[in-house]
Image (cartoon, rainbow, N blue to C red; front, side, top):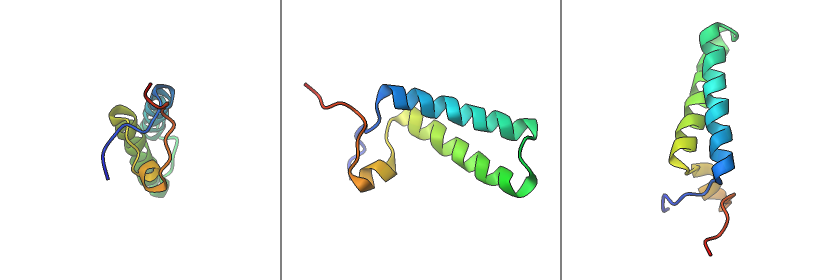
Length: 70
């Protein structure tokens, strides 16, 4: 499995913004104790995949939101 970019630039921005928003929600105490760990994990995955531009789930399903190169 190659680590080629499979996310569009818009999707990458949305993932980063959502990840930061979820992390802020967790920091502000908007999530209770058992669920806060799941929120942190989801936030970290969103930020990392947004920065890198590669989603392993998309690769496994052979999905790409990125336009084909011309």
